[in-house]
Length: 98
Image 1 (cartoon, one colour):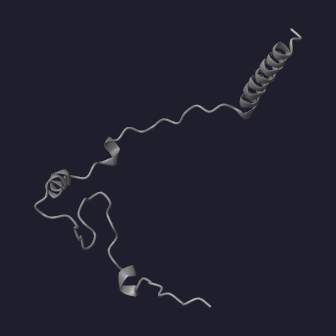
Image 2 (tube, rainbow, N blue to C red):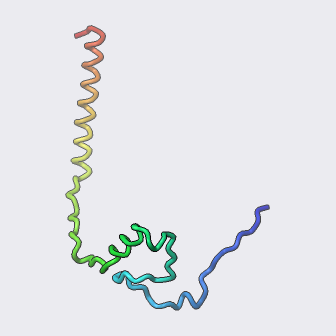
Image 3 (tube, rainbow, N blue to C red):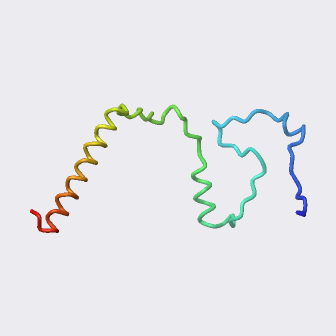
């Protein structure tokens, strides 16, 4: 059989934690860095961690106009008929019929 593996379950203390506010940029737990603190990457990352962006400032994408299934079917049928006609004419030209 298979060896049972450990399953990590949330404790009751963790479930009663304060609600998380995603509008702030503060770390929500222990932050362990893997980069050297005197590197250019760490310096650049520290400068970029400014105020959180407000979602209300972002432009809202408008919903694109959708075609009805009937119009899409008609367009597909016309394109399909054109392809079949082009292939038919090509075969007739290659066989010397026209």
